[in-house]
Each structure stands twice: as structure tokens, then as C-alpha cells.
Image (cartoon, rainbow, N blue to C red; front, side):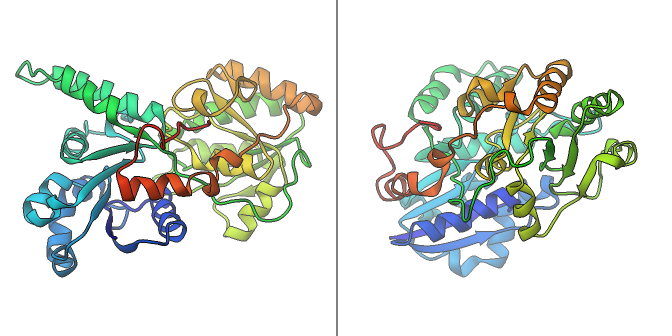
Length: 363
């Protein structure tokens, strides 16, 4: 079976998914085409043209399955290469543009939303990494279409697509070596992108308060940086200097070692469709502490969630840091790992998936 795998904006999580999928499902002849994760507005609209100019020969080959991320303008690509329409077309949604928070200096991403929507309409099979991602996509698409000049009868067609969509997570690699568990219960871990949508302001505001009240903790701030870093990071580095054991992105070995030291991995995000960073930290023995919103209620039992407010985060962290024995037991992450999902992905490619073979996240 020949599978064309298309990743039009190869962010870290997208690259991990594509590479691990090709490594885990080996009875497939894979062809991967990807584009760098920069110039987002151009990338999401221009990916068919980029590939038409750079990859004409490979795109002209016959394939049994076309597996594309939701950033791929697959509807336009099928117009440029009509023979691809004969393949089974699967679109995988790592995220959707309808559920992204927009910053005050950011223009609404109408084009990106339309690419997502056209990709969903052009696909034979839709796959989302969480039920939250699926539902926020279809709810957002309905709200978006209601703003258009015409009163389009979208509700029933979109609901049919929602009912037929699959929920299959991005699995994480099985853990290698000994997991430390609660070996360092007063370590706080931030291992997210350094961007506004991850809401670092709430995280650091709570840490400023904890520090002022002399609650003991140490801090490891990891994660990916970009050109424009929210100013709160520079302020936090200065104000929390006595607590910091690590600041900034680390090589893979050092990153794993820090996660293996246990601690509390915190999320304050305004946007998350699955959250591989928190999953990885939990797998290595950290206690996840996530807001009670977005994808988290379907992934994490209540004891690992707070109410999503800075006050709720402060109360939970101060209690856990002052009395570490109040922290819940390490989370069982085996259901998130590749061995639990390898056959599901294989069936998805071979058969398109079925309601019986595709399991919900966390079950």
C-alpha cells in the first residue's frame, strides 16, 4: 500500500507524529512531503503551489491513501493533481483554526479557517486527536458560516461530518528507563511554547505570589522559543532567579533528565488540543496540573485539574508544595503510548477505520 503523507506546516508536534507514525506502521510504502513551520499565512494558503513547483514528479505518482494534516489545502491540491482523488483521502486534525485565541495585534485568520473547512469537505475520513478538537472545529465552523453574507444551510451537513469523524490521539513513545515519580515534588515545570496563547502571565503571576510568601519551590522553564517572546519571561527570570534551576530550551538528553526528576508540570493555557508536552512530563513521573477546560477533562482525572483561574492554581500549588504528600499518585500513561494505538492507525490506513476499531482518547 502506497501512502502519501502531507505535512504543510511541520511544527515540532507534527514532525513527531509523522516520523513516529512511519516508524510504527511499517507495512506501508511511505512518501512524506513536508514544509517548514514558518510564514504561517503564506504556508497555509500556498502549500499546493509550493509542492506543485518543488514536488511535481512525486505528486504525479499513484497512491492508495493520501494522509494530510489539516493545514494542507487538499482541495486545491486535488484540483492540481486530479488522479489523487482516486486515493482514500484522510485528513488529520492536530488542531483547528476555529478554536485558536487571537491576539490583539493579529488579523482574523479567515483564510486559514477556510482551508481547514475545505480540507474537511474534500476528505473521505476525518480524524481528530481529541473530542474537544472535533467539537470545537464543527461548532466554530457553524458560527463562522453564520457570519457569511448568505444564510447557508450548513448545520445538517456539518453534523453528519461530526458524527462520522474519528478520534485518534497522537501517541507518545513508550518510556525508556526508570521513572522517578515524586523524587522532587517541589520542582515546578513549564515545558510549553513561549507564546501568548499558552498564558504564561497567569503561571508566573502565581509563582510571584508563592515566592513572596516564601513557599518553597524550584523552577525549570523549558519549551520552545520563537523570535517574539512575551515580556513576562524576562520579568520572571529576574524576579524568580533564586528558584530557577533551568531556563530555556535544552538538548534532548538534558530535557529528559529534568522531566525524570519529577515535580509538577503546570499548564495555564488558553489553547490546547492534546498537549504532548504535559503528557511527556506525566509519563516521566511529574504530576500534571492542568486547567479544567479545553481537551483536559477528557484526558486527566479530576485530581489533576484545577478550576482554570490564577486563584485556583495558587491554592492547589501552595497546598502541594507545602505538603507534597497531598499530591496524587503518578498518572498511568500507558493508554497514551504507541503500543496501544499502532493497530488502530494501521486499520485507519488500510480500511479507513470503523466505529468499533477506533477508540476514544483515554479509554
